Image 1 (cartoon, rainbow, N blue to C red):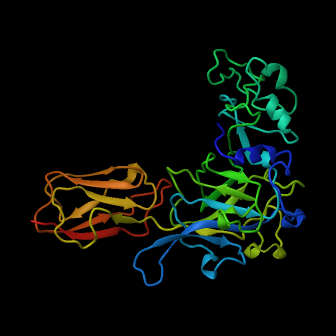
Image 2: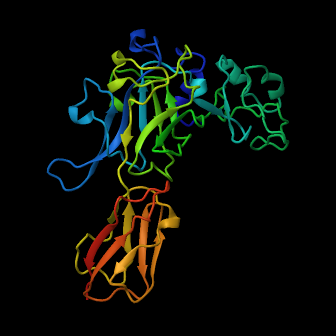
Image 3: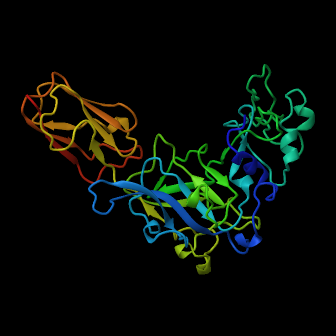
Length: 386
């Protein structure tokens, strides 16, 4: 069964725009000049008016839209560092072959995905989606896909015999409709660099969507504007905290005329931009932060025996979580563990003293998965019960 409807578009977009999207008019796109980033949408952390609690909202961090409110369009200096999906909207179609690759029946090189040669047609994909025993006769030539690249051969899922180097492994096509069941983003095609750190991008949740325009549909709203590249960091890592970040693109990411992508000032194509220059857009992530989850700061009557639970706003490096202290020092050993990627559990052997005010300090040596610590130590005070 096919995973998501966009897969048909991802494959056919490499050969035929009409097979992927029905645009009202060619004027919805701007094929002249280099492809331009006109908007970027991402989630920011902000403090609502008259509130003491932070909230989150998805905004235009770059560019604008006539239907958006002023509060929804501004440079972002507090981007959410965890599970932030970044939607990069461009003004024309890009070559999908250089952005995504299709799933094969088994590893063909370092993974089980294969690039689609530019010029391939849906018929070429179908020929490489045939039954395993007829693949050598149907899946061949310059537009063949899912060809084994490993010197030791490749083993298709469920097969009993190895496929030799240079022979077809086959397109993953469980529903037998002649098209690939899945795609993912080509490694390095699109990235995010924060400071000097290249973010770990998830190729399976990131994708190229060649459909859409600047008309806001009833379903999806602003997050259906297109054409768009959706770029998402791996969930286990998120974004580095407290850093300025920019988008990066492989030189292979081009439009149909072979021009590389750029970002005009304010996302306005009238300002123009040099091919390959995306420096007009950047955003800054929130600092590493922590909250108590079992009780509030300054609370009295806190259990002496229960662990102290803390939540970080981004996945943590487990090698750095030691060093959290309690003052005054409890009689028993203090053990810090990660309950999951972001949840810290502080356990005190024998418990805490009764009716005592404690200070819990999380030092700056506790880091996110990119080695970024908080700007300052995080300090909580609380008082135990009897």
